Length: 605
Image 1: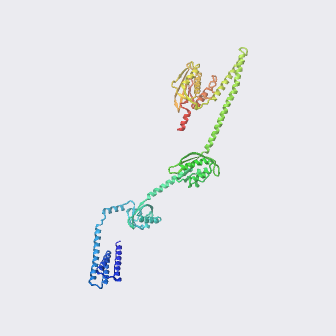
Image 2: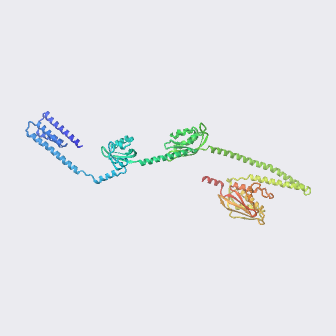
């Protein structure tokens, strides 16, 4: 800059000197020695600012011009002008020298500590640090650069030596940006080492001057290796997940935040006959159009799905029917769709065709069973009526003959046969009545009411007071309250009391009524006697209809079967524990809460 300013000063001085000389000589202006010498002295002082040589040269030229223009004047005047010119040169150069020395003396000397700190930071930095020129060539490099890149004995590197060949063009663009803007940050490219190993780096650089910049390069080899391993793991797990999804019987469609299908499994292709590869990458709404074309109840289904897509809400258990066609079967699918956190969605199509077939088959069988039960009930009534009428006629005729022929009129054997006919007829009527009673036992849980067992047992004792006159009956005063039909529960106790008296061979019969806690919302109740007992192999058969262990005993053998039917209709069960000669204990369970309420709680829970 100083040399450039000196040249400008010289040119200005020469131009001024030439102009002054031309004005005086060519225009013929009067040459005033004082004014002329003062003008040339000013020109010489301007030339002297460029240095001693230019100042002396300017003084010589001014002396020649003065002598030429003042040739008619006294010879002493040019001499005085010459002395003045060379004196001006000395004064200007002396003043400039003093000013330069003063400027140097006032300039702050660099702090040695700062220099040491900068040197330590440069050399000991854990990252690659290069001092580069505007061409990207390394002027100076730190210890880490020599360790990572190689060339430990060299402080300078050419651009083509340390930048990857494929990244040189980009690096030069970044250099131009660096020197234009003053800094660059976060530029990722590759260096190359002395052994020709590619090293990914992240560059941060700052301009120091017109042709100098400091560049810091972070070695990203470990980060890139971790990214590579992570990408491999993600690819492996993605493959496993996709393979698992492909084996599912349900159709799955994955939709990204942009509303495009990123995955569809093989079940989608099987359900709809649409190649799944043709769906991937398309907008989900466009794929939906392809699927809707194959759905019967398209209108309702389409409205629900489009609303879910548009408002980002979930859809659950929406049924749709697939029409049969080329490469697809008729199916009933259950559709569900759920939004996910990243803004995408997951659509599920579950094949419920078999389930619907089973449901239809179950409904058909239920209807058939209900129809069969109605027919059986009508049949029972018809059979009972048709059987009961002849039996009653037989009994009535036998009674009439016996009443019309008192003892002695009929032969003894005839009378005996008529009495046997009447007895058999009465037994038939009893059997028919018990059969009808057994077949009509049906309890509706919705009609259950609280039943106080203490009151029920006391009522049964009063009804059976004639047969219980000589029997000790012990009743637990803390019998619970159960839920059920009071008349049916009383019938259970009545049958058990009658059996306890009928099959008792002890001189002091005893009946004990109580309970033993609860099991699963059911009270465990019992009726215990000290009768003849029951052999273990008959503990189950005694509860079958018309099954009598003693053919000579009274009754039809329907009592315990009726007890079992009533208890099971209440949601409980009945069983016996007995030892021959010691007596029997009949256990049965009844609900402590409504059956309906219990079922509802199970579904709610």
